[in-house]
Image (cartoon, rainbow, N blue to C red):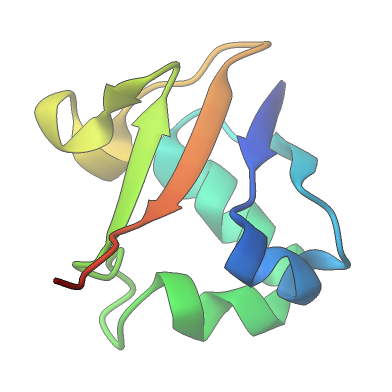
Length: 91
């Protein structure tokens, strides 16, 4: 199954300079595991020591926040678009 993962600008260099990557997985968690196994430098930026998505990283599937669906268990289907969006702080 192929889904498209959009990589934010600050993380592109850790993903071989790509801004979109075709990934495999039936759930968001599986797709992120595939992504971090394929591009290991992304792992520490996206996941904490327990393997959970870091608090300042937001993940969307087709523009819907996974926290309001099924989190990492959110199912994916062919052609879905997964966006990784780091939170922006400042003032």
